[in-house]
Length: 330
Image 1: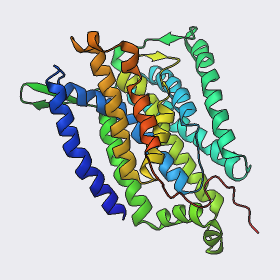
Image 2: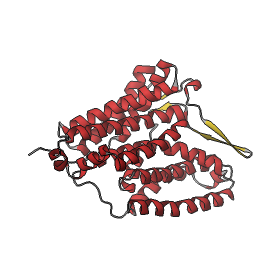
Image 3: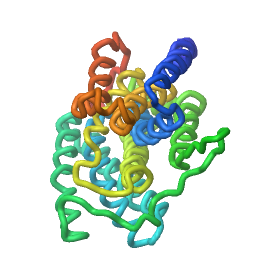
């Protein structure tokens, strides 16, 4: 069933993408530039979505991905400036800080037995308030920060005829993570334990494994991957930092997770769909003839309209029975 869903998604999506790109070519939109932007837009979504897929498989639901994005976007830039290296910012300010946030979220969700949805909402609110505070503390300006362009993550240039396709190495890392998380879940003993922690935690406990530690590990990995996505936005994509930089992308990543039914490969495909819609919005805004014909604010709505439509027509999905429920040993 899992392989059938993936094959069906590919067989429907690939030809549809080719048709859409062909049609857009008549509007003067360059397909390569559109795909460049789409891959940039999908990168943080993929990282957060597959992290949350692993998290929810273990029984923890974290709706605070937006908050992790916000905090790590600031800490990523700051530590990139401290280390003088964009990759250093991604690793220290993104992966490490994100993993710490995921670890503490896992602690309060497992051993603290907190209501996970409420805790996730709190994480989002903390992120919203912490970003301007950190920006003021680091740079004495709460709204915007432009850093040295040399700190940006360099792209890989791929020659395609007369065009150059620019691909971020973080995008390649995200795709590799999809493969690794998929293999972890379905081909390793640890993956079986993670799925058991979400589906039937008492069975995992009887087998002699610690349910809370398993969930804590998944939450930490989720935070680390999401943190990389948060640091990527200023360092690998936008080249600057504003307090509203995430623009709801944490919630779009959650939508991709739900849309996929907690399948890592389908989560990546879903992230590409949402990333493509955002890339399309950016491309519309800079394409002569198109930007004059389509209102600017309507174009900005495209990613969110796609998200709402995807969730509206998602149909029934099966999620772990113990999802969102703290494990209490009897």
